[in-house]
Image (cartoon, rainbow, N blue to C red):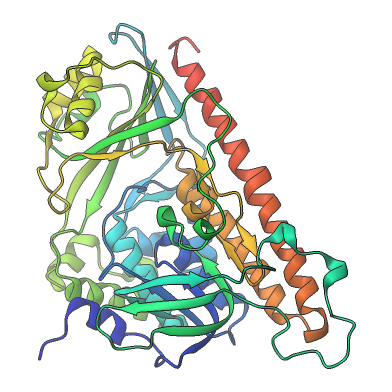
Amino acid sequence: SELSDTQLLNSNNPRGFTGTADVVVAGAGILGLCYAIHLKNISSDLKIDIFEKSLTPVQKIGESTLSPFATFTTGDVLPYDYLLRIFALKDGLNFYSVDQEGREVTPQDIGGLDIAFQLDRRMSELFLTMWAQSLGVNVYHGVAIDFEVPASGSITTDLKLDELSISKPNIPVRPFSTPKVLLKDSSNAIGTSIDARFVCDASGFSRRLTGKFAPREKFESSWNADAYYTYFREKDTTKIEDRLLAWDYPATKHLCFPEGWGWFIGLISWERAPLANLMDLCAQIITSAAAGVPADEIPCTRALSKTFDCPFEFISSIGWAVRNDFQLPSDLSAYGTGEGEQKFNFFKKRYPTIDKLLTENYEVLPDYYGKTTYFVKKGLAYRSPVVAGEGWLAIGNSAGFTNPLISPGINAGVAGSWSAANLTAQVLAAPVQEAKATMLTAAKEHQKFMYDFALPRLFNMNRLWYNAFRDHRL
């Protein structure tokens, strides 16, 4: 019988399932894949298995990148000019500050940044999945993952160097414990558990491992932010430059207003292309690059689309990330049906400049991704109190998140993933007598970097920006 999309993806894995791995990664999102790719590049002998509950890569929010991601892909994957065959170009950040009446707009361009990408997440996660597989990493889709954690000795702050038995004789082969990994395969093609030397929690907002230790922790602030977003097609692209200053430039646009800000991200969408065809297209780029074919000899996007019967189109991701201490009207029924549509349209219509821009130039794509048109994410900023422990660490949204402003989910996240992969390699390369001490040092370093340094500073930066948005002159 014909293979399902999930079976087709999993059949591309380079190794069979054995029930053991050096490293298990929970989640095949961008950051879990980047972690595994970098780890495999610096420690090629490691056996790495990734498990993803989604049956196939799917679209999700978090589409904009900056220099850190482009730097990572250039060093660990391919130079940007190969990837621009499948991703949209991004060059810088444009800010448009709207006054309190919504009529005056003050533009500001932040240029001088490295070229980066606007990502269709389905395509980006498919390409990185196949790249990881080409390196020797197994990526299983349709497999949910969970963990059992020992009652003691798994939280970083509970571990003390003087408790380690590294100086004692008869040191065991496994010098430290790891969380037990439980698997639930939708196709029943592999086992129900896997024994790992080390675990990376890249499970995102579901926090499959970090959630075992403590609930999400809010930052000290009188307000958080909520997001309301949807997808559009442009009505007319002949006079884009007439909308607002430099609107035709391929930067991420930020419309800033007193309650928050809105993003305008132009995407190359491959949503209507069959997965099998997309896999053939990605394989063409990967094998061509491996054979030394220069990027300028790779067919252009339209040619690849035609050759592999992969339709694409240009769409825009547009949404608002607004403070939740703003008192909205009690009755929003005039703005549509459902919370997402009502609150998106409320802020759209609140400011004439934004309303005119959207009404005249963009049309909503109903149910473009599944059965939902308008999306909602509440309480965006949080952090996990424990992001590393004995035999594991967490990256990305499993560790925490602040705000989509300046795209830290991917851009700061990829830095954390890169650092986490380096720490993992150090732990697994340490001699047995030093492994537990090395693991403890790495866990404490990661905990300090993510919990004490990166996330609080990103949150404070966002709070500063939001305060500046309250007056367009700032």
